[in-house]
Amino acid sequence: MKKHARVAAGIIAVLLAMVAVAFVIRRRLHARRGHRSFAVGPHRDHKSVGSLTPDLGPGDTLTLEGGVDYPAMNLEGSGTALEPIRVVGTVENGKRPRFASKDDRYTLAIRGEHILVEGVEVTGGRLAAVFVEGNDVTIRDSEVHDCASHGILASDTNSGSLTLERVDVHHAGSGDRRHQIYVATDQAAYPQATFRLLQSRVHDGLGGNAVKSRAERNEIRGSTIEGAYYQALDLIGPEIVKGKPRPTSSDIVDNVIRGNGHEHYHLVRLGGDEEATSSDGDYRFTRNRFEIENEARSVVRVTFGAHLISFEGNVFSRTGSGTTPVLDLSDATGAEPTVQGVKNEIGPGFSGVPRAFR
Image (cartoon, rainbow, N blue to C red):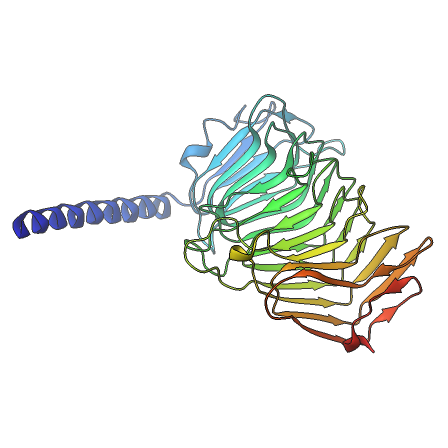
């Protein structure tokens, strides 16, 4: 029995060594051949992107002709942190390249590591306009819109850090489980992975939440989030948990968070969907402007667990009659979260102001 175990272990070691050698050879081939650039479009050297994407490697660039509609694309491959794979759209007659699809599951699927997509427009997709299953993926200076389901969706598995910078997302989502932006990270494969929403706008949702994140770390900065069907911002724990979930950490800084949802929901929700996966995390709100229109159940609601909720230099304003609670802890379980507040400006029409604010 021990002999068989040693043989099996030896075979596994050989297989792992072969995989490592193949990986090194691939990287060396990419380094040897240098960075490659491909110009794609009806008036460029390459008429379509389909035949190019499987062989992309570190430092390679696809430049897409603007003013052209492209079919659904499956973008695969991995760059490096210093030499990402780049897909760059140019502007022709004021128009970006547009990926459009009605019948495909995803209009733009990104699978790999260290990938940058910028200057594109994406619409359609049966399940999502943009699907991400990778790590260190950045989407920049782009527009995602008119999606029957999710606008941007990141997988629970095999997904790490995702950055959305200067991205305009609108007219997406459906029902209560399809969102304009829905991000998750694989805590086992990519511990401390971060979701970043920077200088972006999310508006005119057709369903779900404007931004829903299950990431271990969130950085929401300099963005405008409005017109959500349900919550504008939903920061909760992971859905798939291997072992005890690690606490999440979120910094929400210099944003405008506006509205109250079609169903007069809470503006922001923190915590988790169930007690077993609740993030029990730290949430820091700094210099945001919360604007309530007419009715809302609360500004910030905690479901299940949270460790720390901090408010510093925020402005709360409200129109219409009645009052809106600033913080709703009625669904919180376990130890009551620590609430801190300093230099917040709270206008008329709010109730339940935490004592820490006073």
